[in-house]
Image (cartoon, rainbow, N blue to C red):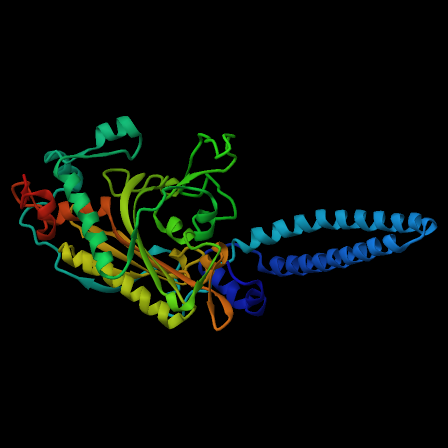
Length: 435
């Protein structure tokens, strides 16, 4: 969410940002409705002041004067009630429009229509040169008894899967390596809640609009109700997270942090749930696009300094790159263009590992700088020299389980159908080769 004064002062710039991000929002209407909103606030405050004075007059009035003063007070009360109804309607429209306004992207963000126009920044590692036709992770997983998609679908439905045998220790090893790497880099580890309220999801930008929309938001809402601390049925809506990011960010919501404590660096290990509602028909086979997986996520609360935030984002991406190199996975780094950015992102990068069986690169991580867009929604501030400022918030995937497993199986496969275990994971798997 942007500051309304910034929007009004930079209206054409914000309009261009919305156009480049393929976001439809009527900014002229927003400016108009803000004028109405402020006018109504002024009128209501003026009438409340009159009502207060009217009450003071009533205390000093004679019996004869009280009737006239009471009638005036009633009229003021009715007028306030009428304006408050109008104000709530205007305020609601204002908030709906504000929720759609995007962050203006960084100057170095490529302008493009969609993911096809993301820019390749760098490439690391040699793609394996097989003297045989490489198998897909599906074939390898089934042949080596690591993956059961049929029973996964039977039990969990579409995109369900079971990991088995060495795939379990392989994936958990990946998670432990990512977590230990983050701790070594100064990130405090968390296991955050994965069942959460709506405000962290709105605050972090996982709702497209102000409220949850099951038609477009790739989030699962829990249908069953629970009891609150009083024993009454709770009216609070609950959701499953698609990443640890919303939970970690909301940990700092409604707080004013100390400037000297920034940047605050945390990482979270969690199960992640994605409805993939917007990905119907894409990657329907295997475990590239699934409803649940594990991930280690990085989050940083940073001072409102663009250069510091840029340096921290580069550091965060660098840690993910280091993890890919530790695993020996060829990858490329992409800078995300405007048309492939979500509304709140200021600057973003993806890492994509090479997947020979799929014969393409596949996204294994995403690093985003939201500047103060999320902080305004979640009310994350810090105090510096007696002034309160909104913090800059950044996030990045250290490593995710399913796609990292795909890349390992497909890159380390051998001609005889076996799969070598990356050196750093052998202590978890207990062997050098899965055969």
